[in-house]
Image (cartoon, rainbow, N blue to C red):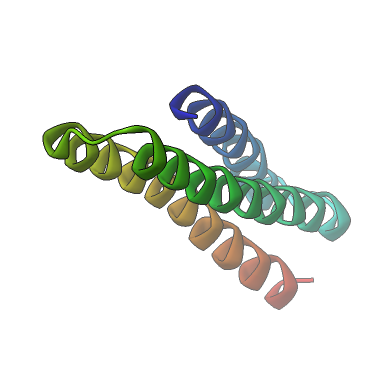
Length: 99
């Protein structure tokens, strides 16, 4: 599940990386909003993977130290997608304001 979350983080970061310069270059609102929708979709996917990862962790492991370690790792990874979603919200607001 960590690999899945990492893949989602990379995809969301790529979307952010592509959308930010579009604001500077006066890209069409539709392009920026499309990136924002994709980032939100990826964040929702990360939420699902995060919940599944925690469920598997607690069901499959009795080692408390391992549970604590992996829970923290999963939380930090999921937080990264939350930050991408925050960026998408700002991008959307700026794009709509200047449309």
